[in-house]
Length: 87
Image (tube, rainbow, N blue to C red; front, top):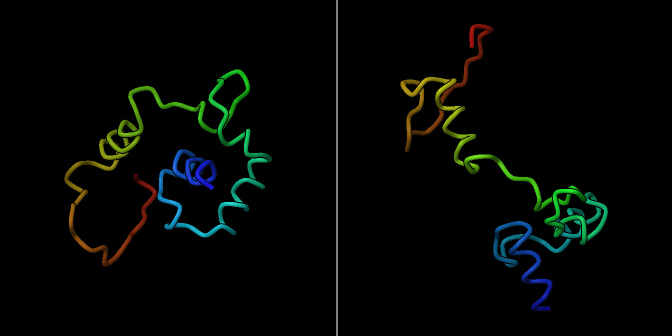
């Protein structure tokens, strides 16, 4: 049980109580195996071997730059989303 709880924490970054066993089993099935989820060797292309240069925060920072910092409002509910071809 403790090994399964550790696997859930490492692979999903949440506490085991925060997701259903059915979801986690589906997640394992989608990956093909538990080993594929836990693999860290880049040559074998495991789920844990993928890294973003500069860290995941870089994705948010680049997205914010593209959208424009003036268009981002924190702690504000979304009331409408409009899409245009100019962005």
